[in-house]
Amino acid sequence: MSQALTVHGAAIEPAESPLTPESWGKLGMWMFLAGDAVGFGTLLAGYGAMRATSADWPNPLEVLGINLTAAMTFLLICSSVTMVKALEWLGKGDRSRAKMFLAFTALGGAIFVGLQAYEWTHLIQRGLHINGNPWGATLFGTSFYIITGFHGLHVTAGVFYLLWAISVVSRRHDPRASYNFVEITGLYWHFVDLVWIMVFTFMYLL
Amino acid sequence: MAAHKHPNYMAIFWYLAILTVVEVGVVFLPFGKVVNGTLLCALALGKAALVAMYFMHLRFEARTLGMIAVTPLAIATLLVFVLLPDGFAVAKKTDDSKKVAPAATSKH
Image (tube, rainbow over all chains, first blue to last red; front, side, top):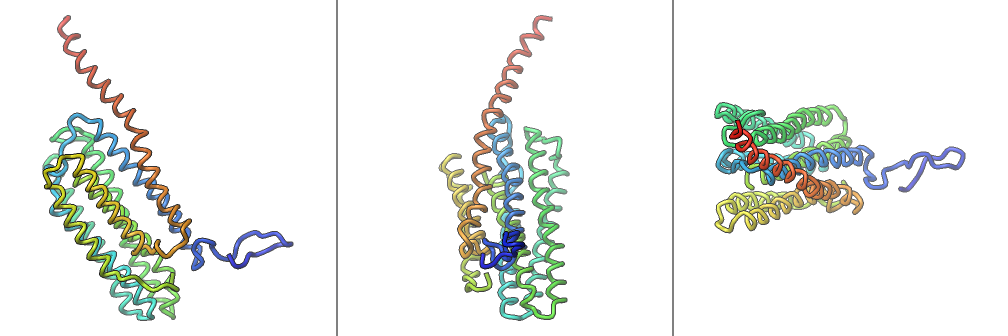
């Protein structure tokens, strides 16, 4: 905190964020992500408690399968790499490469959502519903669709956020002027990847 | 953030990819639920830490920001233990009612 706006000698607001001197927006995103993480944490904790106390919880490994979801995990990891590459190129002032990597990231997210829709369709056809599970506890279906759906919604929002970032990078005269915006977008995107790492482990592997 | 050098992102990518392969391999190990579960949790936390520290640049940020980021994890862990007694109580009640039900029907 180097400076503070003052009125009659009393500080009313620091001129820059003490934790993230680059921008208040970055601190805002971290606050949002901390809150969102509590949301996901609560869902996963609830899932763990329900599963631990259920007598007929199916083995997710046998019911859901992990081949497709392992590929989806890999896809999100790849999209995180393209995201950081976009930021790296933007820092070097290369607008077209930055936009290209942002587009790859958005494409990765869109493919992820498509694969999730494919997985859901397949499971619904096999009888797993939000209020019904042919392999045991009903809450298995409920928790599966709510948690993976909540995450899928985040990925979908992330794809639109990335498209917005591409538009911001295109419009600003100096590519470096959109660095903070893209870094904040990246924070959201990596968070979505991080949450999937947890969801993949707790809902598919364990 | 712009002030620091970008880390070697490709190295982080390979660590994450290898850890994902290891995770999928651990599932088939014959060590039982507790050992496999512990290994999988440790691997997931390791991967999440790599993403947060290097992709989200937490390694280069103020320590307070890191503490803010870790707090939800502590809350979620605590919440599992808070929810378990309630879950076990419901499970016991369901179990008891199943035991009582046949006796009740035999009276009629």
